[in-house]
Image 1 (tube, rainbow, N blue to C red):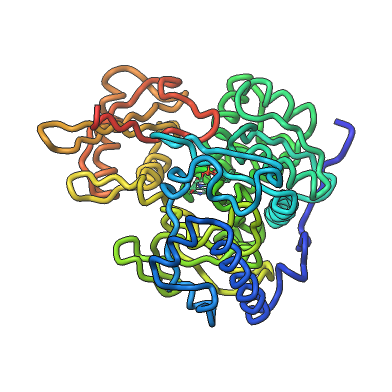
Image 2 (spheres, rainbow, N blue to C red):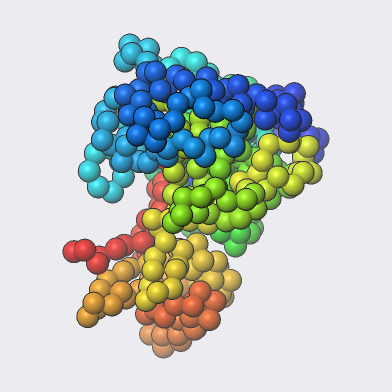
Length: 443
Ligand code: DLL
């Protein structure tokens, strides 16, 4: 290694004036930008013209930020119904980049960006990386997938914008990831949390002490992960693990990011987005601090303005002052998606709850899958977990461990399930977003 990795303790902002802007000034800025966005969406996108008309509301009706509640929601199927480009508010020739998310059924969701949108995205991702503890000059090992998924290119341009050296790894080729993390002395690892764990495991198998490498921050997102998983990742990787959030319909990564000072909720960048939390059943806006579905309106997007987009992500907001000095609202850890929520004989279960139980138990590796089937009209949950590499794997030990898992899941999550403890390496590993649930009920 030719370069000492740096120590960073001082507060650092990509754009201090904006990140610490007073709440009143932030609200004024949001109001002006929201008014312009509503007008633009109504004038340029037939979907919004129809939706606003059907709701009997016009952009001019917005007299305060709270009036946003009078405007209609946008949902994922609206994008699918307008496939591929009919939600765009600019002519196709002004679109410089397309991304798409595959989804499980039907058409992909397509999103587009103008030149200004790409600049804004890079700025917000740079701001997020800085908030997470990255600094100009750092080496950023980017293991988010490159391609139609927004993770790879989103983190890439943000890191360049911050002035970092980017290693554009993408996902996969895990042994090589370990080698280059080592050889290039990365300061920052960007990956999904499940893939970061996979990297750590492969390093261990190669006899490399990954925690001893200079990497000091893991910037993890794109899938739900638990506080227990944070502790696990921090332990095995020897990093501070920071949560980053985003979704392609709104931007990609960089909509919100935790600060490394507090590691307690993700600062949602309110100069570019308006955040609401609603009750997904009544669709009413909930008071700040109450848990519900996150709804986001873009305030500056040119190509694809989004009005009250229902993310399906379950969280709550916090406007408590943060120790880092940033004034922007905090989005608390997303515990799961409304549509990830499993209802097993009446009990609501999020995979992240199961994960938190597994990580607390001895003799298990943090790899698991939930397999759902239907047995005589009843939902049945089977949990496949994996023994730790050093655990006993004779049939009797595996059966004992399975019984312990079954007991803990029952007492802590409240659901009865069958458990199989597999031998090390038998649960499929993630290369990007982990597949935690195999739902075989429709088959
Ligand atoms: O996952 C963007 C992204 C890339 C975010 C890299 C962070 C890092 P999509 O593929 O459109 O975009 O998926 C968006 O992923 O609605 C959440 O359900 C989930 N998700 C994203 N970040 C988090 C997170 C990218 N930090 C969907 N915690 C979102 C929990 C997350 N869930």
